Every structure is written in structure tokens, then in C-alpha cells.
Amino acid sequence: MTTDTIPRAYATVTGPHATFVGPDGQPEPISATGDEDIRRVVVRRATDHARRTGTALELVTSGDRGEHRLLISATGEITAAPAGTPEIRNGPAPTVTLAAPPEPDPPDGPFAPDADVDSQNDGDGEDDEPAARHSFIASGDAPATGSGWRHVLTRAGIRVPETTAQRARREAVALVSRHWAGYRNIAVANGKGGVGKTMTSAMLAAVFARHGGGNVLAWDNNDTRGTLGWRTEQGLYDTTIRDLLPAAEGLLAATASVSDIARFVHHQPADRYDVLRSNPELLATHQRIEQGEFDLLMQVAMHYYRVIIFDSGNDESADRWLRMIDSSHQLVIPTLPSPESAESAALLLEALRQRDRHSAALAANAVVIVTQPEARSRRDIDAIAAGFTDQVRVVETVPFDPALKRGPLRFDALRRTSQDAWIRLAAAIAAGLG
Image 1 (cartoon, helix red, strand yellow):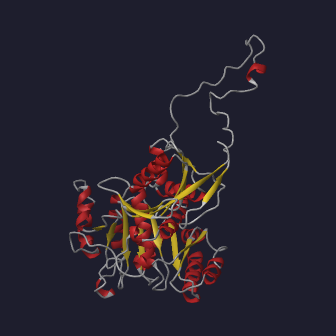
Image 2 (image 1 turned 90 degrees about the vertical axis):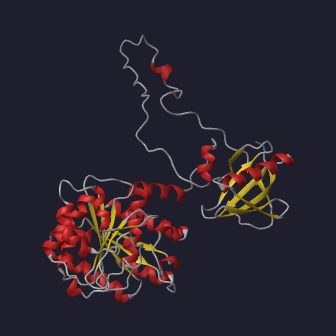
């Protein structure tokens, strides 16, 4: 294609609706009907404009799936816009200079032409090694799946290259989606209250369950005022860990059904994990779990779930807290960007290094997460994060999100940047579970 100057159109997508702004700058509201994808409607609207005017058009879309740019020819053919074109935002419709595309790369793979083939086969071939046969069985790589603009266009036969951010997210989801042989326990711990343990437990459970296919349990392992039950949905039964304990032997019997556990846990329909509640209305003396009782509950949990995430209490001397550490494969320590909560996290790491070999390994392999409160500067967050980089395997930060401040904890309520941060954090944890 020769270098040319073409007009731009914009579309801002919000749920099933979009605002389309043509080259004339006039906004036009459009909506999807029924099960139709709003992105298909937007592409069709832009294609109709290009065909009607007989002029190529660059379509710039923005919304919950990020910003994407497509080139639509006068005949309705759709390709990805050149990667070198600078980013733009909605506004008056300017023009863009379109560079000619590079020559296509030669084909590769087992049937690609090889310049050395003829020179290597000048003889009679008696001493030549036979060429490796091409296998007709596809590799075991998982097929590309997803949603959004790239998914819509890929289904239409139009290849749109991944951005760096999209590739990183896909790789993180692949890590989180793994199924290991045997269960995996993740302990979310910090001796100080109010640092985000419950929030972290719920978000990690949601990510592992949504992308790994369920069988994830968030366990409120708290003697005193555990709030995981308050911030998640209640199931059909008003049950807690105290109700599960006397039923544990029956749940481990050979005649038990996989659905029997549903009476004692609270399923989260959208996020697909289960919650084992403590009772925040009782004093610690009425719901203390001894070592033998914890071990019995642990047998039940590992029998029914592949990933168990402990939302721990603040009493690091309690039997249930110590047995949680003994049975865990990964330690996650949330902290706020404040000296007090960070010092509590550092003291926990120090104590675990001195406790025993397993605890020391947990500390060395730990993941520290610095959660951003509403009014903290980036400098404070980076300073706290830097203080842990030489103490643990991974340090991650999660941005502030109003959906996590109060009310039910639901992954879909988060902003896209927050969702990506939690997926990145879960992938860092998953990398240490293999």
C-alpha cells in the first residue's frame, strides 16, 4: 500500500453501549442487541462508513479492554493499524499518515524453503541422513482464547498482534491456571490487623478459581473476629468452622459425596471459590481450634479442594496459626506502606527464619504485597517495597481500588488495572508452588 493520509473515527465502549465519533466529529450513540458483542457493532458501523464514502478509515477504540486501533479499507477489509503510529485519545477527528507495510517474511516451519538444500544434496544421496519427518500432530499448546477486540477480529480471520501488556497478562493467567498433582496451601499472614489479609485472601481465591476451574477454598483461620464471612456472600446454610468440625469424620468416609461439603462452606457464584467461615460474633474462647482439630479439618480441606488459602488471624502463638504455617507451601505477607505494618511483616519473616527449616524456607520464598491506600504517594509505596526486595522471593504492589475499601469483595467490581495487578500477584505465587 502506498503512503496515504486517511481520516480517523473513534469509539468509546461502555458495557453494551458505545459512542461512535466519525471523521466529521459528530457523536453517535450505538448499542448491542441481544447476545451481540458491542465490538462487532462498532466495527460494522466503521466498515459501513468506509464503504459508503469509498475512503479508508482508521478506527480507534477505547474502553474496559484498553485502546485498540484498526485500519479499515474502502472495500471493508480490516487490518491492524501500524504499530509505529503514536497513541491518540478521543477528540476532534484528525488525519494520520499511513506508512507502507514491510514485505512479508518468508514462511518458516518444516515446509519452508531452505537455500542450503540443493547444495547439501548434490551427490547420489547414499550417505545423506534422511530428513526429519514433519509431524502432523499439533503441539500441546493450549488454543488462544479470550475476549475483546482481538478475540472478535481473530474469530473473523483477522490477526491482530498482541501488545506487551496483553502477552504478559496471558502468560500470568497460564501460570495461575495450572493444576498441580496434590493440593497447595497458601498462608496470608501478618501479625498486625488492618493490613489487607482478608482482601488479599479473597482476591487470590477469586483469581485461582476463575482461571483454574474452581476447587479453591478461602479458609478464615481466625480465633478472633475473622471478617472474611462478612465480606463474602453467604451460601444456603448459616454454617461456620464449628459446624464442620463434628462432621469431619463423615466427610472423610468412603461413602461421602463431593457435594456434601457444600453444607459447611459458602460458595461465591461469580468468583467460583468457597469460603469456610469463622464466627466473628463469638469470643476466641468459644471457637479456639486445637492442633488435632486443625489437622482433622485440614484432611477434609485437602480431600475436597486443590488450592487452600488461609486468611490468618493476628495471634501468631495460636495452635491453628502455627499448624497453618506447618502445612503451607507458600507464604504471602500483605502490608500497607506504613512503618508499623511493614515492621510487623519484617518481624514475622525474622521469627520464621529462626523457627525451623520449613518456616525458614517459607520466609525465603515469601511474596510480599504492598497494597496502596487511597491517600498514599507512590514514593511511600516504592520505599516500603524496596525494603523487602532482599528478604523475600517477590515483592508486588497493588493499586488502590474503591471496590476493595468496603462491602462485598468481588473481582468483577475492580478496575482493569487492579485486576491485572492481582493476576500478576497470583502468577508470582503460582510460580513458587510447583
